[in-house]
Length: 230
Image 1: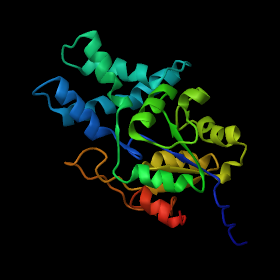
Image 2: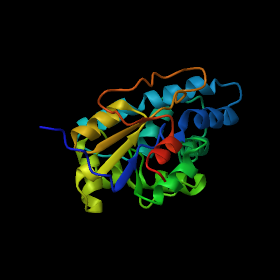
Image 3: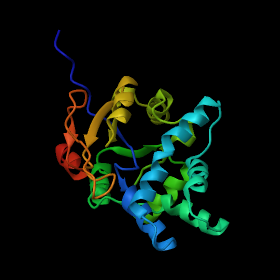
């Protein structure tokens, strides 16, 4: 039997950190401006590396905490001596992440045809302030805080479809991370991979080789908009 062609999606759900915004460059710059002489590149990587273990520990405890709180916990363990106000200001750097150069224009193009939403492990407040500063034109904000679970829990992906009254296969997850797309696909969503070769800094090149699981594979969000004729 011939494989069924998936429907044209009605909703595009975007991973944010690394896919839409350049977290590494912004965090490195912010910490260097606050702490002269620090290696911002290494600090940004160390901070981000604590993210997955912090989420795993929270999930194992049967609780849920917003990402701002997890980021602060990690920051307290890795930061040089700083005042509480300095720690708080640095933690809010995650609210001020710069978008990738083509992201805002591409999202506006895609918004002309689809409902567009983040689907991030960031919290509602974090994503709202980020969107306000960066000009990210979301139709609504969906995230881990809305569903009480972090990606890759299937409740997050299927929650997008439930909230917007569409079938899971009418939602396309757009991300620069294969594990995110694998989980979304397992939850019934369509997927599109975005190359972000320098997500972890200009000194490092990420492997962005196409995966057979995710044949929709694009250089950036502008190429995704081109594909859909937006």
